[in-house]
Image (cartoon, rainbow, N blue to C red; front, top):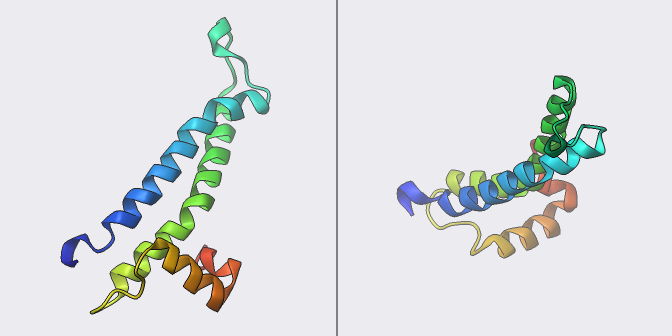
Amino acid sequence: WGLFKGLSPSLMREAGYSSLRIGLYEPTKLLIGGADVSHGLTMPLWQKIAAGGLTGAIGSSVATPFDLYKVRLQGASGTPPYRSFVHFLRTVLRAEGVPGLWRGV
């Protein structure tokens, strides 16, 4: 445990967050009316910012349960409160319901 208490949840969070943020950026630009840069067209900066903000928000909302898992593991002293991420999900859903996964947002 020690120094690496929150490593697994951090890696899970980063994988999901970054994959969604990067993977959804181009389709989101096209969805909000952006130009297809492969045809030599450009799009306004505000559309790029909007696409980046939207995909970042989607990625963050999906990653929040992993952050909660990480924080609870890192804040625990002694024996870890959860055996796995699945155990964490079951425990939180039973005790706090679905909104409990996004506590602190």
